Length: 358
Image (cartoon, rainbow, N blue to C red; front, side):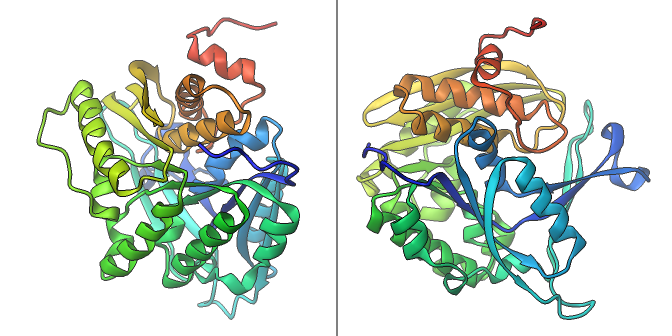
């Protein structure tokens, strides 16, 4: 993989549409609850939280509703996570104008699975566009080591799709590494299949790190899927290997491919694993049982740990281990992002050491 840029102001930059997540107390269903916990959220800042909590400089590119108390809540949350942020403020435009999206989540319990509802009407982040930012300043003058893009923001609207493509082009121009988590969502792609396929393919073609499962690679990039196999973890590993060989042939400039492995025993107990291909070398973290408080954000936690490991310049064999642990850590928080205190805490999770530290 290419070397990281030197003398950059930011280790990691993420574009995102910020919103809030409301979750009932004590793992209760939404319709049966009258008490909810609210947090600021987005998939991309979930990823970036690993680096920011562990002391690396992170910047968030987003957009806000002017004068909104929800916008103020989000800004304060980003500050508390140690993140810089940049984003234009636009007028709400009346009661039926712009707002920040709401994510309404039932975390589930036991055999009652999680249910997530997104309320995104009037979402201000859908208006993110190239004109909102000075990319020459961000990538040229300030400098960025890794740009992380998600298929969620990439497919959110025609404006955000073009914005992510321009970010990738600017990052490529200045030698910034590009990470792309495909994150296919059928509802985002409906009616835009060819447009998004073309945009995602161009972004993937300049990406150094590609993250996704077999479905992501098939539906986003049109790569032929693996042969039908069993649903057990070992089959998933072989399927990913088979698929990745085709993806690597289609995108020869990509250096790192990664995915997570999950088998649900019940809502609160999962088998959790991960797999990466770095160059021609496979690194596999065989699934182990983890206890789950809230599964949402586990995949983002893995990606965050993977990128942090790369930013720290560690050997590739450590990347999948650290990512496995930060993904497992994220499932122990009521927030949908992990908040590691230090690297030792993460490595203790990897080692299965849950003893008291005094």
